[in-house]
Image 1 (tube, helix red, strand yellow):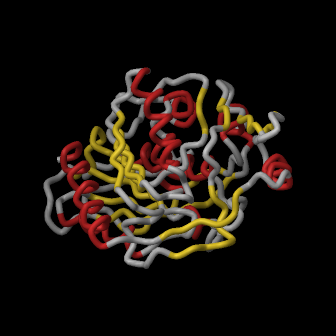
Image 2 (image 1 turned 90 degrees about the vertical axis):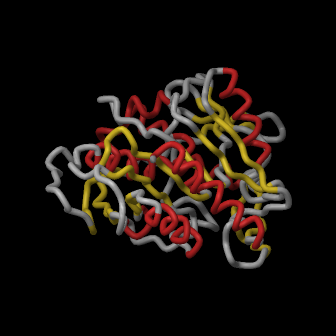
Image 3 (image 1 turned 45 degrees about the horizontal axis):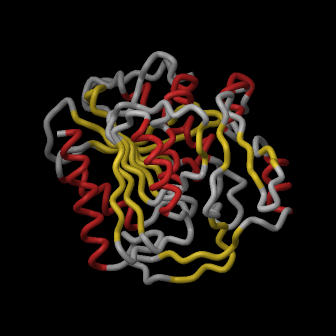
Length: 313
């Protein structure tokens, strides 16, 4: 898709590239060639001081787009010699936020948005192709998490390009795959114990299964931490926020997703229309808190930077 993108030494900044719009994982597995093309962009930023070829962190925003605390982490990476590629999935599609519907831009679309840069930045003479990590927040955390799931990466990057480390912040990990085949790269999930937006219990439960399957995965839980615990904003309740229930949906080997209602009814979740039908059941949870805590913020900044330094430098 982006085979013609090549770089010279010292070339960085604004980068346009091609992506696609598969609505759900099912389309990635079965209809990726037919998915609507998407003009995308991102920013490749080099550190002021660092050693070439640079390690790189691909950074992915959440459902409220880019926020200040994301940039604080990015600055921490840059100041420690780690280059950054900042993905603009929402801006590329003219979307400001999906916090209240999660319909306009999906994790499946963003998966393509991040894997394409993994492939073309691996060819950059100033980037160490073996040291490209991914981090993301909330919806972006979901992307950072499931790019460690080998079956989907085999579809998106069949030539074998892989992230060397995964750092999801408060990710929604509600898709429990039938096939627990995961990257051997280290994965550190940063979650809050009081998160009612993307419940940490799902992260802890799926990571237990991943460990049984041999994944190098850890969970660091911040006590009394809410969603966006690394933000400077005070904890606030958002009544229209679309939150995640504390139960898994089934992710099958063909990429199809099955949601089970409280009454035991199985519903497919493989298209826009499927999502609307699930919303109409009334089982979707609305209302959640988000906001930071000063001590947790400091700890989160330290944990994130330490993880990146350990695996990239």
